[in-house]
Image 1 (cartoon, rainbow, N blue to C red):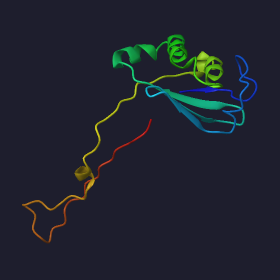
Image 2: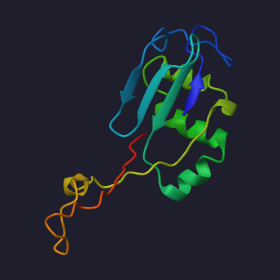
Image 3: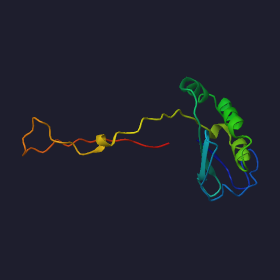
Image 4: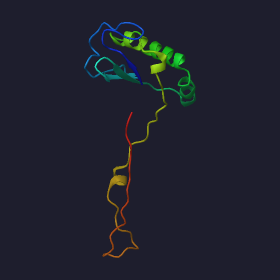
Length: 136
């Protein structure tokens, strides 16, 4: 994820479009997804997600210039203001992290625990806590 100034002036240039100003937007091409939202009155935060081999991703995120090159290769010809927003984001405002998909949870895992054969009818099942953190 990164930040770019989406209001008329940026550190590295100008983003002429008002799309990122005070609006949340998302663009997806079927493989790559960008999500952008206002961070402050004049800075837009953006997050880009795309599939990438794990080892290659670990290397890519260590090199901001290579990461930005990959981003521009994927999104450099998308609709305005995305190319300008991405190009104007300074390298020191960019970071990347591998993320992982997981198989969907079996709904039975989330149900209350049932009494076991060794428990008597008067015994309550011991509480079990299951947590799944979902984010992107």
